[in-house]
Length: 419
Ligand SMILES: Cc1ncc(COP(=O)(O)O)c(C=O)c1O
Image 1 (cartoon, rainbow, N blue to C red):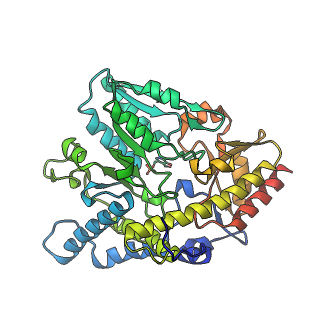
Image 2: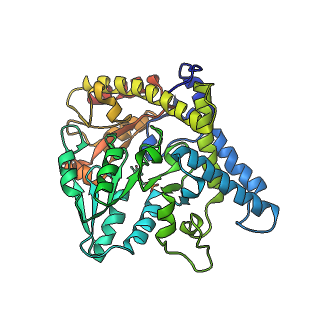
């Protein structure tokens, strides 16, 4: 898979690309372990947005240079996302965020559904991949929810097979859980969905900073993710198979084009941020080139980057779990067996005895260590694990710009809190 130009993971180079990582809190350098709610951005992304304002700021489709440049900016961002998804440029849709895109898509798909049709969602998912489908209950659509195995927070395969039936019209599953890090077997689930004649929608928001997406290999019908979770600006993007984007009818204003993918992008887009999306993909590719100088195309460079970051993040995760397990009254949710780390990413949630997760996050935050507490909108899961009424969990998100030193700092602070 990798060429011969592999180098050790250059964390110093990575951190140089992200100016905000130098932020100081109470005399300490901030440790950004909050990536699952949004990552920091490299300078390339900031420059792209600024450059757009300086040289291309206009609306689309006008007969003058800045407008033409805006069109080019959008086209090159579509091409960048097409390399990230492994699809054609005209299968890429931009939008405000994943939630808004998914509500719009569900509404469009819902036009073709009738009472008694079924949609399958899961207990593991963020509510942005549940609520938009549940909104179709107003039309009589029946929502079926796949349960988890509580011991390791993985989807229950038997329940999944039971819930997908001849009545199923769409299966909506997350690629990776934003609370416990479980990576779902989405390619297998897509096969089950298609065998039942249903569409497959994947929420890849949490997976995108950790693993290479390949919509062709997954054979999914739709896949959504959010650039602000993979080192880009606050936006959302959708992959849709061309046949579906052309057939389903989005709600739109009459003068706007009927041509896909533009017809899915209602109103004026945040073009300066679209410029930033291309820069985020290019940053990941640059990292890939840095890790493996033999990578030829942008797609190959992206593959090299994800290969390197997966290995690096797994090293951090291994130490984090080992360190947490040595703390009394620690309850880690999800997979902890190192032999199964390919089934999870480096996002981890836990509870420490009866301590309130907000109290722990505040203690850490005061020491410059940024973590999240609560349910992170993975409401079904928080309820299923019985933690919702107790403040949820404490979540640590490790991405490729985090360091072993930060993991040790976190563990030391947690030991201090526990004592
Ligand atoms: C797994 C997952 N899906 C969906 C979303 C919603 O994404 P957005 O904020 O782009 O609407 C999030 C955001 O945290 C998420 O983590």
